Image (cartoon, rainbow, N blue to C red):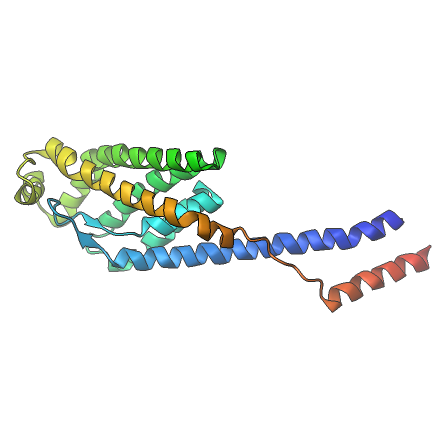
Length: 236
């Protein structure tokens, strides 16, 4: 019986610690999602890239979430970020869908690898794998899905889409070269920049994210435990 009494405060402390950690996790994920959504507004065009390909740093908070909490949390950030931008979409959601797919491929695969190899080398490996998975995965999806959806939304044939890219890069002559000379270099550049920034900033940020929450025992908790002990003693 005395064992139960001594274990009860410890169990209560463990539960408070778990609750504090969960609250902290939700708060961090909320901050990362807000940062990602804001960064998505700061998009820029890149040289030799068609107008419909815009670069931004919104994947950086997603990648931080992937490293800190795993691929599922990263996908959640990616989803909410694109849902926030969906009402103001200029492409009837096609751009948001493509961005979501790219983010899932990038942060999802990188977060999965890093989850099992949490070292500096593991971080580098996961970022390289994430960049390659995103590049090849989005090439496939753009070739077979997103370019057609974009054409349907804009009401233009594939030749016109290719022509938009040809104006910026003469090497683009058809759908295949559009993928090769526009989407592949764009995603490699995007992956390289986000990966470099993630590698630089994650370590100092992770010290804050994974800081153990200090859970102080309040007077009311102490009173509850004392009352429980007195009650148990009376029953004995």
